Image (cartoon, rainbow, N blue to C red; front, side, top):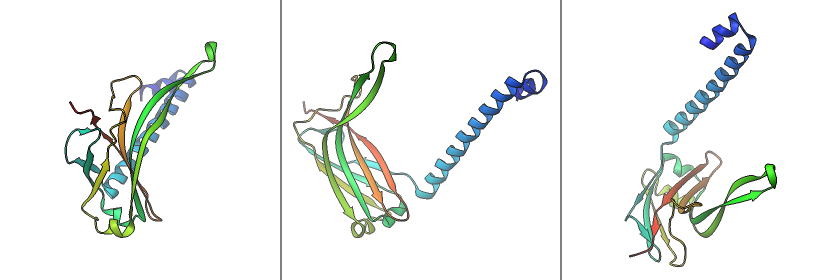
Length: 173
C-alpha cells in the first residue's frame, strides 16, 4: 500500500512497480487456492514402507495409500527408478551455462488395470519391487546426487494422477 500511495503522489514508476508486484501476488494466491482445492477434492497420497531403509539385492515392499478417485483410473503404472543428476556445462567464456540433467540408471515398472484398482479403492495398493544388487545407493548429500524414487502415474478420461516418492536404498553392512 505505501508504494501505491507514493506512486499516486510522487512517481508513476512506483505505481507501475507496485501494480506489477500486486498482480504477481494475485497469481501466487490463485495458484495456492487452486492447489488447495485439488488437495481437498482428490486427497493426498502416502507411501508406507514395510521396512526402513531398503537394501541393494533385497525386496522393496510398501503400501501406497491413494485418494478415493483412484477407481476412476483406467490404469496405474508404478515405476521404481534410480536417478543420477549430472551438471552439464555448455557454451564458452562469459556465455557459459550449467544445467542439471537427470539420467535414469535403472528402471522397473508394473501396471495395474482398472479392475485391480477398483478392488483397492479407499484402501492401500501393495507395491513390491526387487532392488538389484549392482546399482548405486542413495547419496543425496553428494554433488551431484544419486537417488531412488517410485513414480505412480495413472490416466483416465476423468482425472489424471501423478505422485513421486523418494525411497532410501543403501548397502547392507
